[in-house]
Amino acid sequence: MIPVKSTSTTEVGPAPSHVPREGQSWRRELLEAVTDVDELLRLVGVDPVASRKQEEPVALRDFPLRVPRPYVARMRWGDPDDPLLRQVLPTAQESQPAVGYGLDPLAEADAVIGSGILKKYDGRALVIATGSCAVHCRYCFRRHFPYADHRQNQGFESLAALRRDSTIREVILSGGDPLMLTDAHLGRLLAEVGSIDHVTRIRIHTRVPVVIPQRVTPALTAMLASLPQRVVVVLHFNHPNEIDRHCAASLTGLHRFTLLNQSVLLRGVNDDADTLVKLSERLFGAGVLPYYLHMPDAVAGTAHFDVCQRRAVALHRELLARLPGYLVPRLVREVPGGTAKELVVSDG
Ligand SMILES: *Cc1c(COP(=O)(O)O)cnc(C)c1O
Ligand code: SF4
Image (cartoon, rainbow, N blue to C red):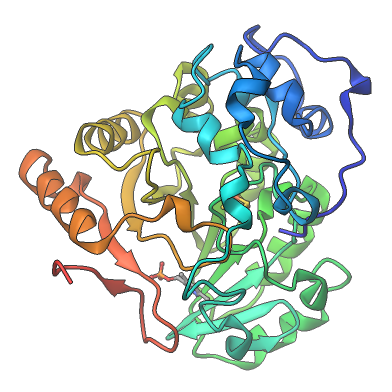
């Protein structure tokens, strides 16, 4: 995402976060997202002074707080260690330098085949549909990506790279988050991609329906259903508490598509077997199959979320022992220059 200075502020009037907001439109939820740390803590009943211990993190300047209220509503009241709060609350640890943590750990700059288009893996191309996200996740591996250099929205000329390369069977809309686009904009992009004969699958990676369930509108569903290609939607849930009744209900709008989930293994958020088992079971209950469980990437500012490989593999073994095979996500890691995401199987 582009760490854009948010223009939305608390002027809109802080709604009590624990009041259901189902009626609110997704655009409005975007505008009214919480961008102030003190306000966020107040909304979840956590004492700002106690929880902030250290000085204002430098990181907040280039990657500001941003969290939509429907997501805040799923946080536990009064719990500074809430797993949802942890994913979005900036901490001073982010500014501590860590060895081996760089700005572009995945060397993605090498995979660029057109403006806003990456092709790292056989048959698949990834389109950066937009640089922005509905939520700013503190562990994000794209937080330093130079989105400004790969602005996709300005026109669709760069899609020529997709047309030219007939080995591309699957187009992945990513970002940032493609569901940040308006329906009109997304519709144009999808129509364009959908008109390419050699593309047989269109995949959308998104976290918007997680944080703003209202994004799954009948108009969105109809637009996806009108494509000649098979549509795969990969959601990004990390914790079972993210899937409440309202969120699960909104996902029914996507049930006619293939629904997968990818999570990031995060220390202090989901790095225990009970949580991961529950996540898989809740996902299945909402019609979503677990796909990937990612080892966190070595990105500057995220070292405090790291789970070591030995522990990760032990957790994954426990999932294999406790769940049916189809509910066990693949434990993977991204390796620069690899031909696929790498399965993590040994204790390292
Ligand atoms: C992760 C990724 C993909 C998709 O990989 P799958 O294993 O098919 O999910 C494609 N392109 C890029 C650049 C990626 O980072
Ligand atoms: S993890 Fe995904 S949704 Fe979160 S900030 Fe990064 S790109 Fe956006």
